[in-house]
Image 1 (tube, rainbow, N blue to C red):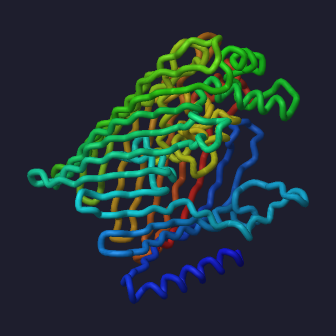
Image 2: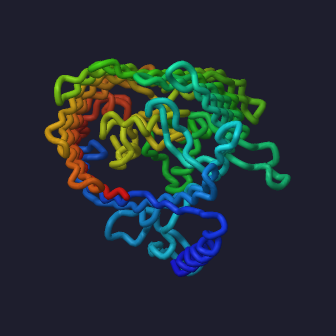
Image 3: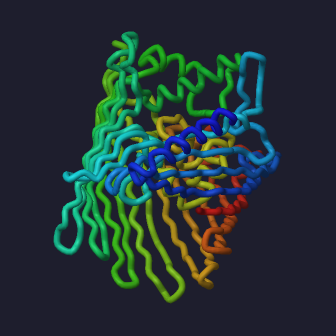
Amino acid sequence: MKKMMLMALVLAVVAGGTLPATAMEVDFSGSFELEGILNSSEGMDEDDATSDFRQMRLRVQTEFTITDDMKLITRFDALEKILSSKDSSFTITQNDTGWDSDDDDDNIDFDRAYLSWKSPIGLFQLGRMEGVTWGTSFCDDEADTDRIKYILPIALGSGTFYLSAVAEKVGEYDKGTEDSDEDNDKYYIGATYVAKTYRTGLLTALYNFKTFQDPGQALATEVLYAYNKSDSDTSLNPAMSVTEAYSLYTTTGLSCEGKVFLLAPYFEGKFGDFSFTTELDYIIGTIEYDTDNADDKDLEAFAYFVEGAYDIGPATVQLGFAHSKGDADYTDDKIGSMSYVSPGVDWAKLLILQDDTTGMNTTLANGLGNHVGNGFGSASTAMCDGYKLLYAGVDYVVTDSISLGFIAGMSWADEVPDGMDYDDDQGVEYDASFTWKLTKNLEYKAVAAYLDGGDYWKTRRTGAVESNIDPEIYTLYHKLTLTF
């Protein structure tokens, strides 16, 4: 912390010394968040204890305006931790003197720093910035990405047409000779048209990954790691046994190369009291393995949602359907799980089934997880199985500062394994929310969620209905946010 304060002081002195010459301006913005979470039965076992904890985060973004057309933008998170814990990274770390959980002297994480330049030929942004976002929030997984981005705005009719291009480095493995030509790269070209009442766009992308894992390899890695660590033939993930993991490792190895193409059109508009939103994300590609024992596999998957909403006085009602293709068979000749490549954490229509805030994205049903699992490239079972979700809700504005919301969603797994007694019924979730804007900069939000789970959670764990599994769960969540 002393080093950080010294560095901040030096930067302030340098900035102060340059102000008269460059007329540089510095703007700060950000948020301070306090959250409380209670999960009644994450594992869905009858004897599960209730999980009850609070957590916090300070986020600060700084914009250095060098000239009217040039900015340096940075952002850091601090004290992102469970309250009353010394561990700012949620884990106990090992140092030269042993195990240490006192990380509060090293809890500032700078996650973004990039140059933004409005040149005569368009906007250039270079550095680490927001990525994995496009169109609507559906299929978005906001992350910090290293990229070069170009945007060209063109006035067209009554709106504006935006042409964009992005080159992104996901993994850099070319420094040195041992791992040369093993990079993971993404390339995007997007076109967006923004009018007064609607906006629409099309994103195309190439994912050129030289070091990757398919869902089966990711699961085999998880199972073998758990087995080697515990030296017992058990795993929280029932989708693959240790024997099956060793067999897959022998056949395919634990890495592959993938070339994947993405097409993602979207539309969002409001016409009077009626609004309509939709997005389709479609991927196709080929996976090549590093061993001679495995044939190449085709990859094809999709996800889409359609939602309509109508304003009735102070209330807005919505009805929608979402579908993310799943693939429960990791051993066949095709890969077809959309959520493996794009879980869509940002959409989060339902707190228990689709959010990662409460922690049940990985712990639900003794490790099956929910629709977003442990994120991109993870072997989370429910995530890889995909889903179909029919939902309806209403938001009601009580006053200028208070609003209420209710949403219910009926969910099915898109694909479950063949054989045995598997069921795709994930049940119905009900969420009720309360939002109170106490002041211009201070907001309180509370959500009560209840999942009346179906037999999917019982059968996916073992292949048969277990009498000691209770798929009914409730979650209480509240959050106080100060923005500045």
